[in-house]
Length: 265
Image (cartoon, rainbow, N blue to C red; front, side):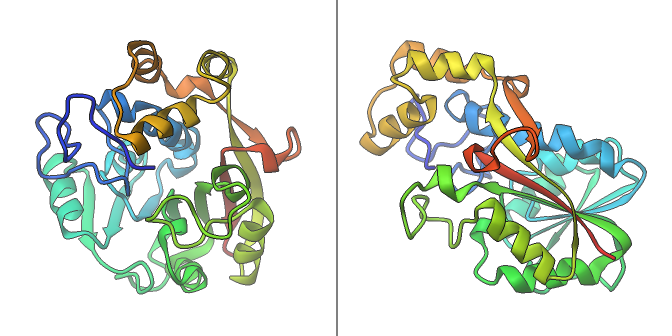
């Protein structure tokens, strides 16, 4: 989803961070109008960071870099690979705990069996050759290593469409398609989870015509001013307002985002 800066800045660049503009391809912390999407991504990092404790981790596609830095707080080492030169320069300057490397995710610039965990959050939907990327993850992981992937659930993110709504997405997946992709890549599934709105966000949905997401998109598409009550609600969202639930506990097809954990045999 493309975001619009309420202050009228056409680049959507957060104050003090002119080197990395908000384009709609990645989310950025510290911007009220982007806060819902940032927190929706942040909760997955917070939920899965413990599985990176004391391990060598690759984040494949790190965007702004806040997530790689969060993981660096518990991991032994974090290597980040991103195709965007400006993102690499930004992360090197802002997050020195992350070893930022420019590279193609279809040809990861790491040797075989280099890491214990590969993290790929909100990235795989941007890739043209998803199967090749999964093969690369298997190559750089050590035996028993984890691949952790999050991605928008196609069923709820682009309902009833053959092509994604987001122009930066190439192929979105549902839970069955993501599972198939990982299994065909030689991985063993450890778990499939979904990101859902918790009670506070459900109340926001009710206050804004049934969907806080649709209310934001409508303003962005129309390039319209945000009502103060909508901006206040979006700015107040926290990662605790989202629930991450096992597919066995709630219908995974109703989730907003999918979170898959797979093991390299």
